[in-house]
Length: 274
Image (cartoon, rainbow, N blue to C red):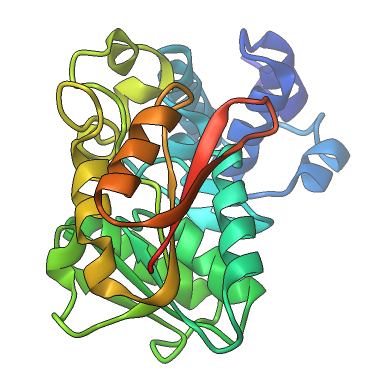
């Protein structure tokens, strides 16, 4: 029996061609250019088996990013696994906002950092900033620490803390900018059992009966950790803008407003400490 080639495996795959090629790149450890140049050459049996196993997992719905262990965010290649949420393109708006609003040499806090995507992107884009990132998951912090090291970020520029939201900080710590992309899906939302969400950590997605539990905790504790005129910026669901603005105002934040994403959905809410 003739050993399969890269070309034959891709041609026979039921997956979209781009996905099949990406899985084969991962299975072979080779770049796309190599596959194009050697596509008609027989592959080692173990490589073919690895590809077919990855293909079966993808057909079953497992996210491509988890299968290949990597996701691009803000132009950075980041490691991801099932311990962390897969970074979304819309979250890049949160990085843009933080980098635009942060004064020179400011201290920035990223609450619930997950893979470290937001904190790392901010630290790489604005080398003058000192960034602190927190998460209650030790597995997530291990992923974030590895990603930071891969980008050449030292603890003096980006440090990590273990703890749930404000519990990870010392009482007197203050920041010019605080950002968060917390869980904001309602616990009973049927979307949690569909698509990629089935494979992502539930604790990074769902937050109470209305999806606002984490956002309530973040808003209520913000003034204790913001400098005068410091900014809190959070990402939230497309239909939660009004509710989050109310939470910010009740917490004593000023200049509260919401920014839409590129699709026109309310996505980021801002507040300023008095």
